[in-house]
Amino acid sequence: MFVFRTGILGGRVDISVTVNGEPTSHDVEARRLLVHYLREDVGLTGTNIGCDTSSCGACTVHLNGESVKSCTLLAVQADGQDVTTIEGLAPSSDELHPMQEAFRQEHGLQCGYCTPGMVMAAVSLLDENAKPTELEVRQGLEGNLCRCTGYHNIVKAVLAASGQPVKD
Ligand code: FES
Ligand code: FES
Image (cartoon, rainbow, N blue to C red; front, side):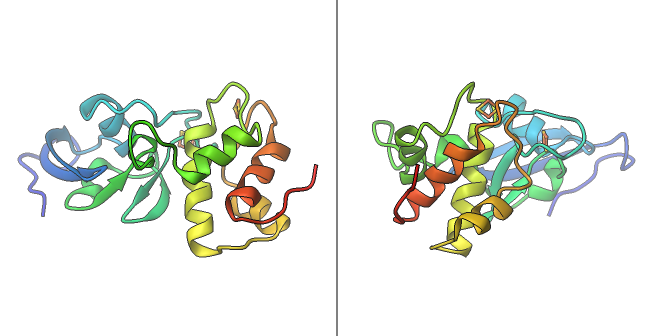
């Protein structure tokens, strides 16, 4: 449990968060967003920031295995919790996660800015629904925007990662 050291809005808080299996501890402003904690305090810049309206999903990570937009949470809300970022998804440094491999195979990225959040959301989607239909994939990823509009190949990648045949 975190402890506020001064007033809530202007105060600072000691928090401990397990990030990609590694314990991290930092003294943060109480108003610090989780995405800023991950990028600037922990130094994991794979999680992107694409908007200031909680609408693009570029900042998607897993909190205790569930996908969340890390710009919509305070870092203090992750105190004592497990966070997984795109850097922690692959099983090793020379092996991609099956979802990352499917994005690579199906050309599910163009500029790549949305990709970390898209991949994290897609992994969470398959955790909840192992064999989604194309419509379910589109609905499941509707909180993640791709400014390159590469949705067709992203959907193909998720279907491929689910082990289902992919149509062109
Ligand atoms: S940066 Fe979080 S939803 Fe856009
Ligand atoms: S690949 Fe460019 S924003 Fe999606």
